[in-house]
Length: 471
Ligand code: SF4
Image 1 (cartoon, protein in one colour):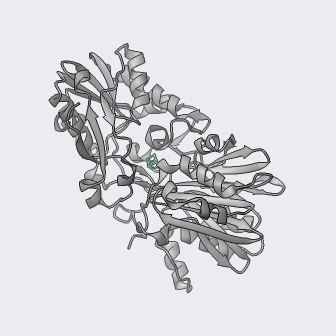
Image 2: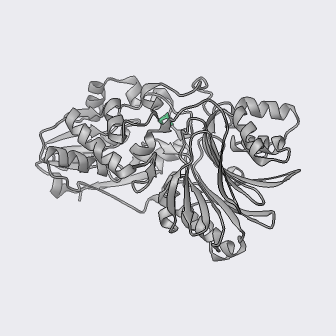
Image 3: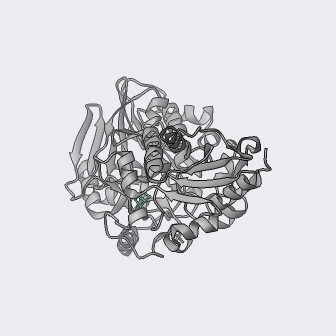
């Protein structure tokens, strides 16, 4: 083994995962939610929370940390009810602090609601100012509190109307799960940017950011909640309403590249298969003459296998990932990310020595990790390293709930492919084209691809206003 080095985290990051269950005949809903959140842990590792509704009363528990660290038997026993919802968080807007952990529980004149949100509003700052001018005092710095506040204010006795009216006011990306005293409600923004699925387990209905959580708790996926849809689940089962806001299908294409778990299904497509197909198209667009194909584990592996199958070049494990670095991903602050938040990868020297190597990664954000990996593989004796990337150059920031650096730091926004190749030290560099990516994911759907194309599905704030709620 070549000496492991500490690498800064160099990926875009998903902000949150959400989960909810309306009980029916199932008991132990807090435990089911716990396992659901466990399956969604890759979507956020800073804080975790569960809220339950029992007899119209909502109780909740949330803390900083991983799902397994936040909850124990006693806490879960204490959280029993007929409806439950949960949240895992990584902050992009709002501070990384317990006060910003979710679900948010709000008490108002018509009762209580708990709200779990994945995404980011582009007009939260404006709405928050308006509400503050009207005397509303905010407890948190997150835009999810703006949504909860609007729902509470607009609820004149029909919660569905309140959600619909709120959706007419908020702009941006949101998948939300709302729990009242007697209902579980799921809603997606009119572009369906962030994912949300409906599942069923015996007589219970569930909502989850990803279908992998349904598999974990023994439920089955029924379908995605549609863009602009409000899904209400109560004793009568699920009912669908529409917010009647103009929009179109624009699911985040990065879910297929990196964020989503490979065993999840989104937009009717399995994420692993989409990643594998992207490797096949990548070979067609950027063939290489080499002895072995290796991946940057884990998210580059499916594409590397696709590349290997298409090219006939054998796929081998050339980089070994330390799988026990989870805890170090909790701190999102830039300073800590660079010095302590580390992804440890070791090169298998015996595998790469004397070889021409194709290394497949899912994306390049800053380029720092790629440069170090190419250097490590060459230091371990590889003759050539050809870097293949199963997505196009990331050139624009995301305003929809994904942590992206400013354009200044995005290597793809500032340099040509040849310049990047030289900086990284690879013998060749090939990015999958946007058209190739869409072909791999499935050309029958439209996606948000704004971080590659700059083609945002809606007006976005000026750069610099991205973290509009951050103090
Ligand atoms: S800008 Fe990129 S990361 Fe953000 S929602 Fe669109 S595709 Fe996803």
